[in-house]
Length: 511
Ligand code: ADP
Image 1 (cartoon, rainbow, N blue to C red):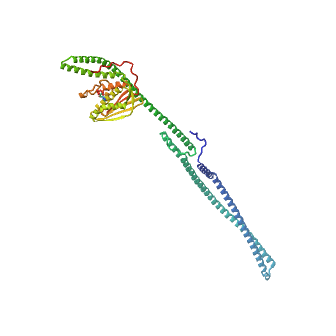
Image 2 (cartoon, protein in one colour; image 1 turned 135 degrees about the vertical axis):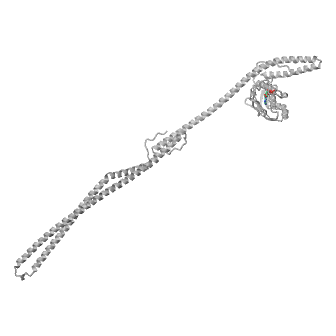
């Protein structure tokens, strides 16, 4: 897993936007908090200066106008005084007999006094005008100041409201941007990451991971993806190991099962071989004794038959001889079962052997409506051809007897790794499972029940078993009741050396 990056990397656009909005917000807050009152005070001061300046100018103007009016009045008074003086001078006072100069002087004095009085009045008037103008100016200025103060407070409050509104809007915008940024860059990736984590926790490692975005969450997502990849590799490795382990376990189990089956089979074969060896010894001993006894009986019966002239006695003696012959045949078969050696040795061509045996059995097969199938592949072993021929005839006879209503008889020969094998398969009645362990025992037969004509001795398979054993081979049967049976004989290429112990005495053949 790659280590998490130490430097956080937020998207540039988001950072710039947040910075800009924060700066704007701060400016507006600063304006609202400090600049607005300062601006209002400056405004107020400036207004007062203007009012003051305006008042002074107006006062100057009023004073100048008053001075001009006063000057004009004084000039008018002076001119009217001059006009009156001229008029007085033009008066025909000479007609009067009064003291003309004194009259003239009195009039001039009166006129001058009036002029002075008028000048003083004009001056008073000018001062009154100035006073009233000042008064009106002061009233106007006071009113102006009141209006200015009202306007200023209205302006301040409107400025504050505007600033607050803009600040609130900006703040809301900042919050919106932050919320959107938070959702887009934090919440949504976190949720995707969480969903992916939950699916991974449930074991789904193939989940689509969020794309790394270049910030802290991106680093986290990248680390997470690396962890998932590591997990996937680990799981693949575990699966590979588990698979290998399972395959190995299956292989070993199969191997063990095979070994166990082989062991069981070997055990059974060994037990059967031991049992059959004991049976063989017993049967051989009995057969040997019976062989002598039967030989004696047959010899005596023969001698009596030669001596007797009585036809009835002769017939009885012939019955005794035939019974002795049959007993001899049984004893010979028993001896064959018991013997563990071969009479002759030589190459045995198995397909040829099968053809010879089939030639003997085919007439019976035709009679029963049994179809014969040959699958004869080349195979040659060393052994006793006559003995093996007997084995094949026994198997073919049993197969035909199992198919009284017809069927199919298949004979196969084939070369094997060990040597060769032949197989006789029928589609007959099959063998009950309970009978299978006893098939090769001497005198085991199912053919003595009911049908007297088809009574069996129960020696065919035991003799065959003895012959195959003497060849170092094995005989096996597979059967399904109602479906048929298959007997297979496996033979080594070369039989084992002859047994050390001497073969039992050959019984005397029938006369
Ligand atoms: P026998 O033929 O005299 O009975 P065997 O030793 O040849 O003696 O056979 C023993 C028994 O094995 C038979 O009685 C029969 O029950 C059974 N058997 C042998 N071969 C077959 C077969 N092909 N199909 C059915 N049963 C068979």
